[in-house]
Image (tube, rainbow, N blue to C red; front, side, top):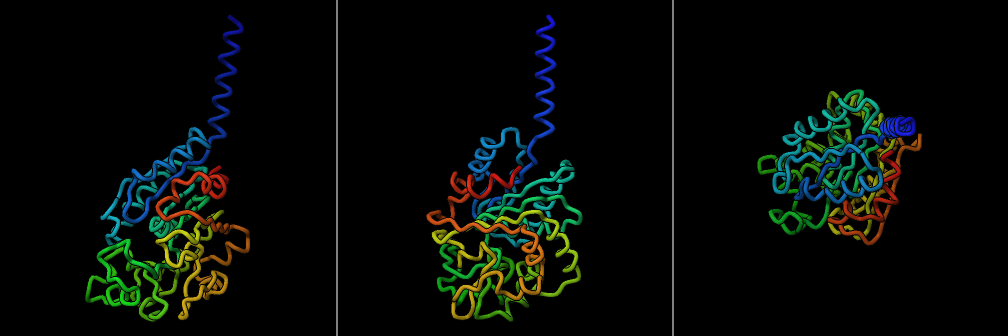
Length: 289
């Protein structure tokens, strides 16, 4: 009898200890033209590595709905993420794929006193897109003509999500004036909340940037590392841009304290980032503790 009681006490103690040491909740945000269902690969890899993790995958704006105006999508993502934050006083992590990485940034920048620890950006066009638009067949074929659609407010313009982060190196004045999402997140266009958004972004403990040369969709692929094209279509790295040098939204500050982590992985196509075990093992797992 005493042995059984002792064993029960031991098991109870062990269970409580495991619960106390439990991993922080994780929210996974899908990208453009996919949905929550496709994120089950990432869910399963996290659960295998960190059993018992509380994982949330918001089932909102999936597939063609993901092309809707990003600020229209924003309230639903904000609520989904804030609900988890409110129940997680010890902090949470965000794993955000492709376009979803921009949405995660928007939420982080607008949540005062948030407790998001790691923002993991998985092949996400953080400095915009300027490339092959075959992924969205409704667009014109030539990337040199897309600005006519994206920056002309009398047309569809900024009502299509891709247009809101279309960053044309040949039309920068129009981009900064008319991009109502990316230019705003980057504080490249003035708005009254810019300093508060910057402050909120700098609360992050880790910003993990993952991308690679065989992505095939994000163009340039280095946009996933906050790089962009110049007018000669050469890559301007993050540290060589004004947004970094003048610390528009906090990148330089985060970098100075070692909070930026950059990974370039070859051989991964865009639709496989969230299901690649090697990518998870090398670049994601360590930031989900």
